[in-house]
Image (cartoon, rainbow, N blue to C red):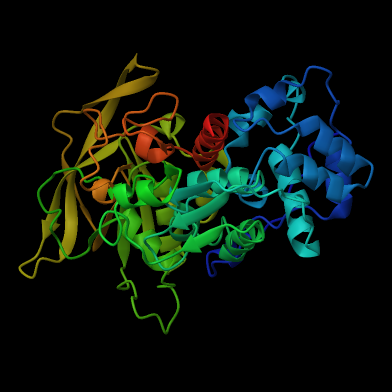
Amino acid sequence: MERIKMRMQSPQDRINNFNEVELGYNDKEALEEANRCLQCLNPRCVKGCPVNIEIPKFIKEIKEGNIEKAYEIIKNSSSLPAVCGRVCPQEKQCEGMCVKGIKGEAIAIGALERYVADCALKNNYSSVLNIEKNSKKVAIVGSGPAGLTCAGELAKNGYSVTIYEVLHEAGGVLTYGIPEFRLPKEIVKKEIESLKKLDVEIKTDIPVGNAITIDDLRKEYDYVFLGQGAGLPKFMGIPGEEGNEVFSANEILTRINLMKAYKSDSKTPIKKSKKAYVIGGGNVAMDAVRSLKRLGIEAHLMYRRGEDELPARKVEIEHAKEEGIIFDLLTNPKKILLDENNNVIGMEVIDMELSDIVDGRRSVNEKLGSEHRVDCDMVVMALGTSPNHEALKNSNIKLDEKGLIVVDELKTSLDNVYAGGDSVTGSATVILAMEAGKKAAKRIMEEL
């Protein structure tokens, strides 16, 4: 049997809305895909999952029609299955290890996880019963995937957990970073509500480092987990970056996802551009350029390497192509051109040439004499992020030369303070942040 393809909006329809592109499996499709699973005795897929979901077991329950049981199995390992089923890079993890993928197409593990999780949210399944509370208290800084996962693991084991979030809505990058067409915010809210049912308290609009310090939290709680991520955008340092219509991808995505800038009555609208360039090739770059396309903008993606080197997920690249995103590959900006009013009018760019493989990826060199101009009225930098240390004010937490928190098995230089996710590793995936949150919770429980 061939892999069951997921239904989705047509490219012509979806570029005119922010609704979810992929529509998920129905009952019949999920059963057909589940029946492709070989139920391996030594499941390689589990080893490929950062949070070690017992994949064959939950798929077996789908086959037998026990969706609630399948959900219990997934939730034993993952706090955010409806999120992971949508945004995890399964092709590099569980599906990348699937035996079926050796001579054919891997089982659609992500789509099946999403199916089970969506059924659970729709039918209000609960995976945790009879929690025995204890007297221990844990504070968590940041309500992104690392913080939410750590909170879920601790709460279902009886710990009192309070999350401190600087923004007015919880979810971190799940709420402000990933577009609605990839991850509906209603799904994120429901996943967060399921944590609140475990008595996880979430305090929003509290900037740790200013309103309250880490030392304050250490006095009030037995342990502290730092999962604030890495939200400080990087720029190229080229002339013209001070222009009025030069943005970070963070700002564009936050205004669209959190502030609904695409709506006609938005208080923070994005100026209607005619032609915009997003610089970068990762998932964030793809999210930004596809979002701009939905605003009616001629959207280009500029990346200094070739298509084979694009770090974004293949499915996102395919969707972007279908939607009419223009790829300007092997090209790099040298200068952003501004008019007398500091508005963007174009860029000076240069062609690039691929060279040898260094540290696992192709290096690139400038092609001499290939400088040329491109016209545009907006430039968006999607070059990764670095940690914002506002939360660490006066804490004396040790950092490395890159500004990342130094940890030993997720333990920081301060007693009873753990950290995990992007503030420790740099920009990474949702599932790797979840893995860190889960491991930190385990370490805290072992110590307590």
